[in-house]
Length: 133
Image 1 (cartoon, rainbow, N blue to C red):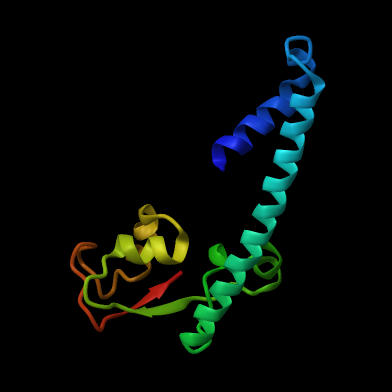
Image 2: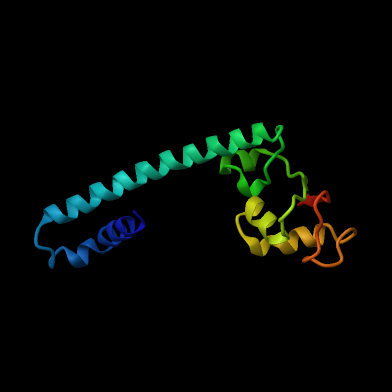
């Protein structure tokens, strides 16, 4: 799917240069339609993802997600607030950061926000309650 999108985008942006080299205008039209279909599918998948995230939040008891995980419209209207997270067996700061911020490298944010109770980012214990900035 990603390859198809990349091909279609490349074709659209390079169409003036490539049009003289293509065998037919039908190829360009097919690529344009494929790109439009991929964009429609992307919109649908994003909506499904947001619905799933909302359902997860509901099942967790209504805990708010960090702003980085919210839809852009929700993030802009919400006031920034800290979220707490209870460490589970097998958790690392990297896995918590990946879950809440989308990247494990954001573990430093969590570590800095919890310096009072953490002396080493590699030593967290199940049951600890961490603040997620």
